[in-house]
Image 1 (cartoon, rainbow, N blue to C red):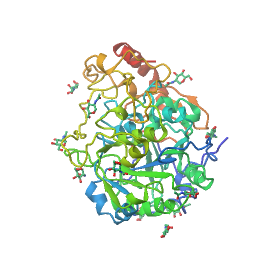
Image 2: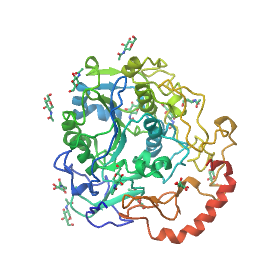
Image 3: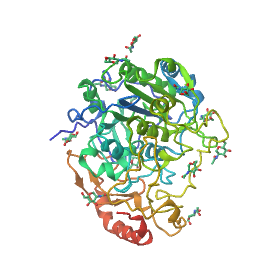
Image 4: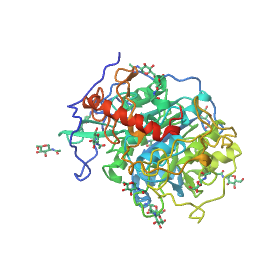
Length: 474
Ligand SMILES: *[C@@H]1O[C@H](CO)[C@@H](O)[C@H](O)[C@H]1NC(C)=O
Ligand SMILES: *[C@@H]1O[C@H](CO)[C@@H](O)[C@H](O)[C@H]1NC(C)=O
Ligand SMILES: *[C@@H]1O[C@H](CO)[C@@H](O)[C@H](O)[C@H]1NC(C)=O
Ligand SMILES: *[C@@H]1O[C@H](CO)[C@@H](O)[C@H](O)[C@H]1NC(C)=O
Ligand SMILES: *[C@@H]1O[C@H](CO)[C@@H](O)[C@H](O)[C@H]1NC(C)=O
Ligand SMILES: *[C@@H]1O[C@H](CO)[C@@H](O)[C@H](O)[C@H]1NC(C)=O
Ligand SMILES: *[C@@H]1O[C@H](CO)[C@@H](O)[C@H](O)[C@H]1NC(C)=O
Ligand SMILES: *[C@@H]1O[C@H](CO)[C@@H](O)[C@H](O)[C@H]1NC(C)=O
Ligand SMILES: *[C@@H]1O[C@H](CO)[C@@H](O)[C@H](O)[C@H]1NC(C)=O
Ligand SMILES: *[C@@H]1O[C@H](CO)[C@@H](O)[C@H](O)[C@H]1NC(C)=O
Ligand SMILES: *[C@@H]1O[C@H](CO)[C@@H](O)[C@H](O)[C@H]1NC(C)=O
Ligand SMILES: *[C@@H]1O[C@H](CO)[C@@H](O)[C@H](O)[C@H]1NC(C)=O
């Protein structure tokens, strides 16, 4: 069995240092290809992938998400300026809503399901993600999460020794920035859960030349700018990404790298974010240029679907307003975009939060619905239907949203299903009801107090099952 390398004292409800304290960048490891005790979790060997499946435009897609930064601030950073000269700037790229977590969910699931906060959620197993689409075509994938303590970790966050100052502890990893771990269709399937890996695994996988074909990379809360500044992010990019751009085991002439932000910082204006496409797969003539086509986080799904001829999720990835495919990929695949670009008045407001109904919205609660099963996505294929999908419950047949808060109910999808992989093997612990705190902080397992609460919470869960009967679309 794999051993877990824990650094410092793990305190479940530790008070931690945040951005108020000016922090200076410290390299967490000797190089991006070196493992480090600062990353906490030891590597679980190299990932195993099948043969490379050729795409029409690229063979490897890597997306890296930075946090909450002004377009103008990013544009003023010397590191971003320098990167923009070797890549393609997408200057009409929009996030979908606020705050962070719904954007991370949407980028892999095609919808944010009404979510308007960063609470603990899970999404039932018959609701698909990009993983279903990739695996249907044998395309390898991984998510690499910096400072996640072990592969398949389902906790709310993780606190460890503060390696920046050497003083006290710090919460470097948060579940809300790990979209795939929120999907039971990933977390409840061991082979999938263990492909959500930590940065020691990343170091190992690059060295072994086994970086998969689709990747989602989340730096920790200081390196992604969440708790820090754009200059700190620039230092991290200089340490981590820029050397990797010269590493053919990471970036080759069939690789594209999407460097983007989760959301725009200011809620009262539309949600434009600074986005670069880097990598050897960016056509030579486009390097140092700008593409002003209107893109959203759904474009990262539709472009991948177009590239490999994948099925679609039948959600935002097939919404003709929001799903433009990166133009060079659209051209290589014969896909026709909608023509919206620049600051066109056809760009919808994507700064709306709180009032969009859905199963992850406690005040405008609706059950999970089937995707639009008649949609044809950018891959030219139909919609993936997961096992157990209830296709009778569609957006058109939905009841009016319910205000669960007014009924004294919590969101049923805030109940932690208790799946855990502390030893690399699936263990189901007691489900815990909490919209904010399950499983947090602990290195090995879930909070001990949780078991005691489980009985009462289970009763609530059963109650909700009746209220939201149709929601349980298993
Ligand atoms: C871990 O971080 C410390 C700074 O706190 C740094 O001195 C050390 O070199 C790092 N460890 C590795 C292996 O890079
Ligand atoms: C948000 O988007 C607006 C409109 O595109 C842009 O002017 C601004 O720089 C972006 N960032 C912030 C934080 O406002
Ligand atoms: C660490 O804590 C000590 C004692 O409180 C303090 O003197 C020192 O400045 C701290 N170091 C950093 C880098 O914050
Ligand atoms: C996980 O899968 C098992 C069957 O393998 C099933 O019994 C259980 O309900 C699933 N849990 C969730 C949360 O989907
Ligand atoms: C990457 O390679 C280019 C030449 O291809 C070189 O100019 C640059 O210094 C290299 N960067 C790093 C970080 O090694
Ligand atoms: C891409 O890289 C491969 C392997 O290094 C090489 O054989 C091929 O010629 C390159 N193609 C282009 C278009 O540069
Ligand atoms: C969204 O942005 C628009 C301007 O682009 C602004 O008029 C509107 O008030 C914002 N909405 C919210 C909810 O802040
Ligand atoms: C597509 O997205 C637009 C903009 O957010 C939205 O108004 C429209 O309802 C969506 N279409 C469907 C079919 O969901
Ligand atoms: C895509 O094709 C259109 C139409 O042929 C052309 O105008 C455009 O320049 C092409 N764009 C790219 C990025 O190749
Ligand atoms: C839902 O109910 C809560 C508690 O009664 C109330 O504060 C909130 O405004 C309601 N939300 C909506 C959208 O009506
Ligand atoms: C390591 O990951 C692989 C999947 O990549 C999995 O089969 C194996 O069980 C994992 N081992 C441990 C100890 O986590
Ligand atoms: C981490 O989780 C704990 C509960 O598990 C919570 O109290 C704390 O606020 C969380 N911290 C962060 C930074 O998410």
